[in-house]
Length: 392
Ligand code: FDA
Image (cartoon, rainbow, N blue to C red; front, top):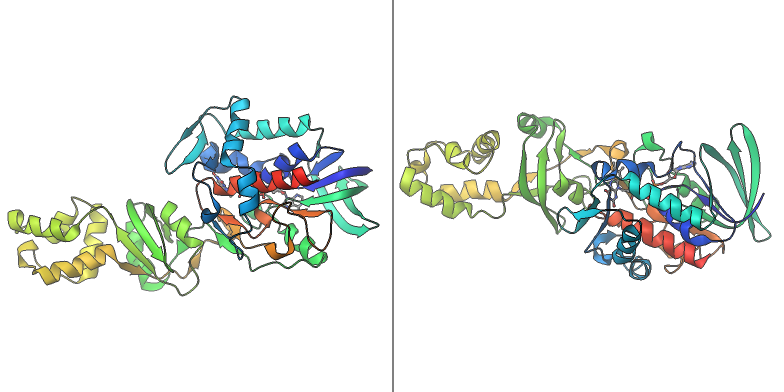
């Protein structure tokens, strides 16, 4: 079977690329349905882009690499497409755009665009040996027990990263890169809950289920969003965000309720209700269990009137710079994305084509470009898929 383009992976990036590649194009995937991660994303409503998406929202060994694709296919281009398909959407918070209805509408839109461009899709297809000679790629595919060798001028690798193996992630893109001599940067789970051990975990476990607004700081980066206490450690948007910047051994600095001036607050309560216990007063601002924990951690005893300004300052430091050192993360089992991937030094930032092997393209999560939480990763899938599709 002879093709112009073979796309491996019918996820976000692969389908976007198929919608723009033109010519004789086949998309293959081992899953039963296309776009499975789109389907479950954003709690079933798909946070499909972010109004503020820009290069500063991405991590990569080369922070400039993503600029070209992001500026040529922007969030406004994707919104325009969504509008043309009459998909209703809303901004939830921080520029994050979600479908009003269902993420399935985004999948249907991409499938219809890919079909309009003439692309064919084979699901439940296993990808076998991949070779390259005479300017063409030959890929062995097995579908319903039948083996077919497909020949294509362009091979686009859009098989994503390693996150959530249960949903079909296999890390195939990295093996293909290695097979053709392209470097791959270190990969690790990102946008993932962080776990704790020993006495720190013992101290956190009673807080499981509580959530509070917080700013989390690690390695000079800060995120201010929700913080959730779990049975194994910490989660919530602020932790998922910071997990991309955290490395083993690093401590997090947690600033609870960053809008509150705790010192002024405690001083004022001391004047009017000095007989109250510290945790009772704090409990007016924080969940009771967390208020109790903070007072315990500060080591202060007695009621509010017993505390000097210096003692109150100790409690304030506890509330604004609570140091916690995770022991690890929940790993690829729950990570939303994979940090790292195909080294961008080996790819053209304009087309996503391998510099050393014309016709070979890598797009989406497989590439060492990782977005923050909030629709940025889909925007990269759309922009990089579009860039490759245009170039083919
Ligand atoms: P993607 O993973 O989408 O597609 C890869 C495809 O390749 C899959 O269809 C897979 O089956 C196939 N494949 C893999 N290995 C194969 C093999 N060996 N043989 C054949 N096929 C193979 N992002 C965001 O911006 N907003 C959001 O709301 C969310 N929400 C979210 C929730 C959850 C639970 C997760 C896990 C992730 C998110 N994300 C997200 C991240 C987002 O889903 C992710 O960045 C994109 O799906 C990446 O698109 P790709 O097309 O690169 O990979």
